[in-house]
Image (tube, rainbow, N blue to C red; front, side):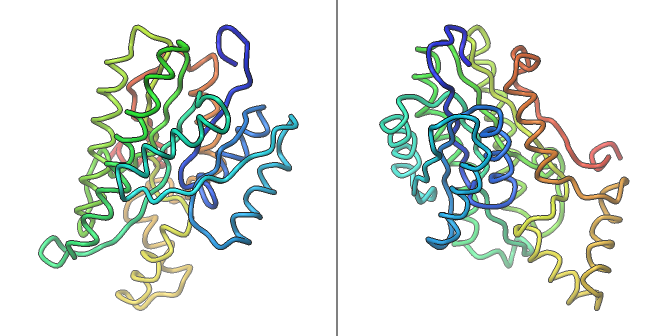
Length: 266
């Protein structure tokens, strides 16, 4: 709760109808936060996500789902306004929405580049810019930007993703510095391989290129990059979010936390 203790905390997690975002929403709901969900899915998938998060809640305020196409600046900023209109305030913003596509630079489709930069980087700027005035006015706010190990290093055939995630890391540092004297923190989390739908296409590609089984492709991906040869789980990342937004994380700002099994230590 904020320093005054006058209201229940509200968290908006983009891209939270599945995967990492849904795990974060579950953990925050169980910890007493009101949850604003956002993300793609069928009506049934969205309803199931809302029900799942509601089942974790320790209070009577049910989670709500908000729709926004984060490829456009106006929609990203309107998302913040819609959540503030519905809940009164946003105390925690988790920018988790993201997409991926792999190709060499010269073969990278322009539309894919534009969409990845828009969703993975520009939407982070727009949601942060929209939420910060209210956070500063209340003298409380937490922003967690889901970057990636690819915000710290590069890999081939991921030009747009690497560029966007490096941008998120830089943006996170700038926001942290601009708000360092307030009770508003901004941090990034940089996961390595996490077994979610975003990784499935890369597993399929590895299977085809190297003529590997599904499990063989997973083992190959892990052994190429992560010394631990283990996936980070969505629940691990959710636990890191809880730490960063808790009292122990109140003076942590501007960091980019690798959760990568030693990937960036090499």
